[in-house]
Image (tube, rainbow, N blue to C red; front, side, top):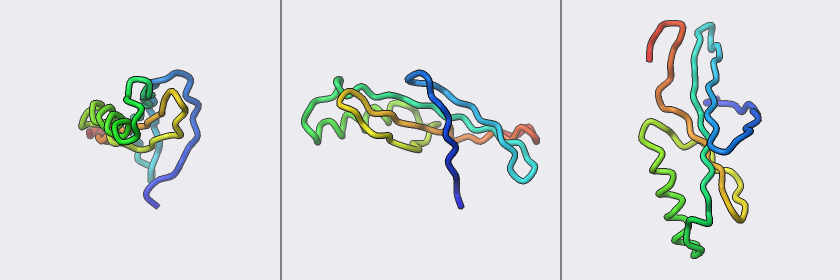
Length: 94
């Protein structure tokens, strides 16, 4: 199994979450962030809207990995990213 889901409440748009867990006795930290893309900033044509969402995702930066695209409403779509770098707090590695 490559991963599992933990439900965490997100209170504000564009929240950042840091999670520290133990995996086989080793402490690891993971950083996540949720971005809310305002669809009103994108053109209403389907193909153009998809390109707009793609560009907004790419703007986040190379050190973040796309994890999940949530259910869209008429106004927005939530997108979750995980920082690619995994910190091993027990060994002091990055």
